[in-house]
Length: 430
Image 1 (tube, rainbow, N blue to C red):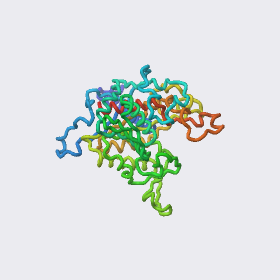
Image 2 (spheres, rainbow, N blue to C red; image 1 turned 45 degrees about the horizontal axis):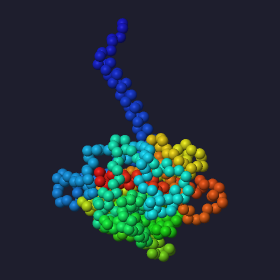
Image 3 (cartoon, rainbow, N blue to C red; image 1 turned 60 degrees about the horizontal axis):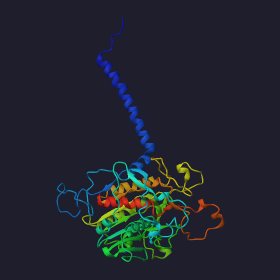
Image 4 (cartoon, helix red, strand yellow; image 1 turned 30 degrees about the vertical axis):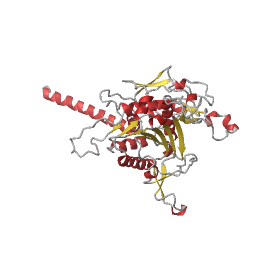
């Protein structure tokens, strides 16, 4: 006797069982991929998104939850909602109209950034313009910037990379300031450029960790055994009060290893009485970010001021990262990296997750200038050997330029002018 044929319902059940098994296998594979490559995924996603962290409510408002509506940000000409354009996702395009100013025309560029003066033979690195995929950056308008800063303070706070962005901004504005209507003064950690006709200042404050540290001297700060004091944001923060726009950065100085030293007491204590603990670099960095945000919450009125944070500036110290020689770096590099997915080994993914977590949960209006990915392509734009050397080079170094090439800082004019074009765009067209 032949077995009875399968009923249609039995066939459906069998097919569903096979489908369920396939779906379970697919889901298991996806989960495995996420687990194995989560750091790369999270790092690249975070630094390719155009994020502005805004609270859903005005912290100074007395209205109840749900009744508040976000208003136009201070300094904004347009709210940017119509564009929905990610300014930080794009490509570099050749532009014969660049640079935006000449190195010789800006007297404020420090000698460690004047690459042409120190013998760089090419100028191609000055000719590239950042082009977002879905829109165009608004042209930098120095007059609009100065008019908007009339009677106000724009302050950059951080390390030498933020100082480079400060100098770039000064040079961009200097192009429309009459010869005798500006000044540059330095008071310890504070440098102040004044556009006298506008009663406006563009300032830089040296604070590589934002918190108090043993590296706070603006001139002598090359200390390998770095220590940061917990809860010390006001040590420097008192100098930032009254700013109308602040651009923070801090990253490079934290990258000394997996652990970081935190001072619990005061630097004035005797060495024997100092209580220093070691924590993970991520924990130390999180402490600094939380301190910065608390200071912003207390001292920056979101109705009248703006706060920015510049993401990590990449270095190019290992040419193997982009398929180059084993012991090479940015020295003699005159072309950029073409791989749009490139990400160098200096990307400290765990630190970037700290930024995402702390800023994302803060509820404080702060705009991230996500310059990391677009700058990662620019191995050609570093100062390399074309800068003032603060110590005489030895014969051994002179015989091996790779050994003393600076693959951290950037020539001016150059890449950091683009950072300020992005700052301009997010300030006026957020």
